[in-house]
Image (cartoon, rainbow over the protein chains, first blue to last red):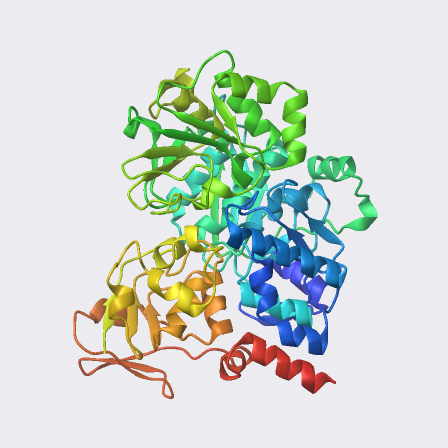
Length: 419
Length: 160
């Protein structure tokens, strides 16, 4: 009988055959992502690190991104402790503030490779599914234990197959598709499951796939994964990763799924997730005209070059409406510099955009763009939970870069096809 | 004993707002902010041995573990929900916080007492008995060791 991606990759990594969904196995992840929570993770195992040492200095990848540059003494101290840990244990893969948002950085640095297992103390670790990685989020304590033992248990997940056909119409993108899927199946629609994307994936860029995999956790998925095709191979080649360095593992054609869904990309319309749940998805016409105070374009969900280009296409030679604070958040320094070179940053800035350092700040309400009571923000980020942007009496709407840019111009929620 | 009842999709921002994630990590720092945005009385009311009942997808959202650390520290005996989000579920095993998936019990409860027979895997509400499945032994071993760090320590010492 054929095997799913999850069965195959976990079988390959655990050296076991015929894995069944529900089976519990032990694996050694290839990478462990930690960010600003490094100091909290390491402080859990101070004595144990002295007793047992760090299992493998190649295992952790540390990216400081969540509150950067530090907002106060406490966050500055967190960063300092992370740097001290890196120096003491000779951690090879450390990226200090300003490099970018952790998920984008792992991608760019070739640290999330097809056929590998990457776990991270961040729920959006599932992003690397875009590159055929078994990638999933874990808690801080699990990360601490991994630093000591290098291994963890995993339950082989059931899988859901989503078949995509055709390509998007203008002003529609991956964000609209993934919000539509989440709206259809619900915030727990893929709970504990692996979600596989099949079909016309050649019509989706790497950036689009990243957006979709990034939102996998918002439907409860353990992983949200794409096959490795010529587009992903070209990307890997462009960052200096050769074919011998990875395993392009994919599901067998006769693999078994607990659910199969299909989406015709040409029928997807711009949609928006309304407060306070990501699966509260509506067509834009249902909310058209609602006044906005802030528009956020970027984050790990939609902060790549093609996302900024889509925003630029709408905002070029226009201005954000009076009363709208337009925030631009590139996913990494590399994205930021490419956008600078291509004049995208200049266009966005002239449209009224405030360019933020590549980090997580406003998305989790830590700093840089916290909302006030009664305010409404339209954002390309991944969560609209109550209080998410620092204020429980504010509203967050989630949409694509095109929709956010169009809404910024109008000063109210609107359909990008109208601009 | 208090029984706190909440709805579906109680996410980690509701359990512990994200804005405190990088400034609070010890149980004492976490406690005042537990469930702040959905139940402002929770942290003053909660007592050792209390139970939380909730709908589906409890703990969805961020991987932050402050909700689990905090709820364990204030003495929550168990959370009974229709279902749990996976990172929260795993974090709870790692902290030794007991989660029970039992949709029937959640539907039946209106008010009053909830008793749990951990040995027998049963929940008793108004004399009605609901059975729930036990965790696989590999995973129970983590909880029984007092959480993942003590469990890992024990295993690493045994390996020597």
